[in-house]
Image (cartoon, rainbow, N blue to C red; front, side):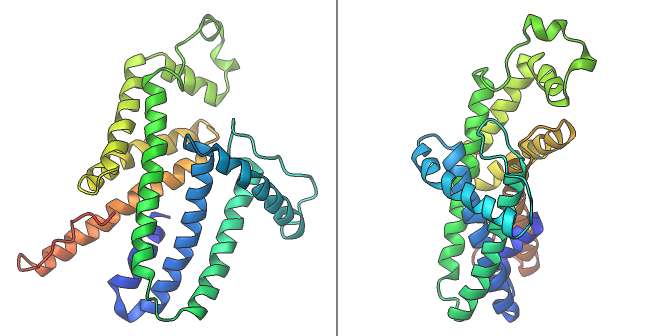
Length: 268
């Protein structure tokens, strides 16, 4: 996923001989990631509850229609629930936005062959993804520091047998047993998110959050925490930025010190 995201951001400019194909890849990525970030903003960022009230009914209707007429699922889908994720409806929504992105990329490329605005849209996409991840991870980090997301162990937790706990409950018990570790995890998310807000420190923030999110993704999958979709996408965004800079470093080394402008300068 990270390789595909990095390609969608750079393909149209890095290889002029593949500009048309790269433009289609970029336009698919642009529509897909903008729709994803729009959904995340409406549900995860404070102050955008009004957007959720508008978009959630539309998403419910589209999910139900797609499931019934395209996937032929007989039972009604479980509707949106902000207390959990990774439901059937959430996975179907990924198929929906991927399908919309594919159709939009083809139509867009037929109508606009000059790619005149792709560079500006690429910068816009990078900025939107950067701020989306920063705001979401900042919120998660603050909730850990202020003992909101991970609660200290209660007498009920201490009296419960390990075999009676769910995988997610076991993980929450492990995290709640050490206030220091929870605070460290929260501080890493807050620091990485703040660094991601500035263009000058974007790379450092992406490196920190890539390590943090890799751990989060593994915990979510291994302990069945229902935030697999979003955490995987956040990791893909930060890892794509690291991949871009790594490639830029190699290109700078090949060009030598005579290059006018270092590719390590943060563009987003």
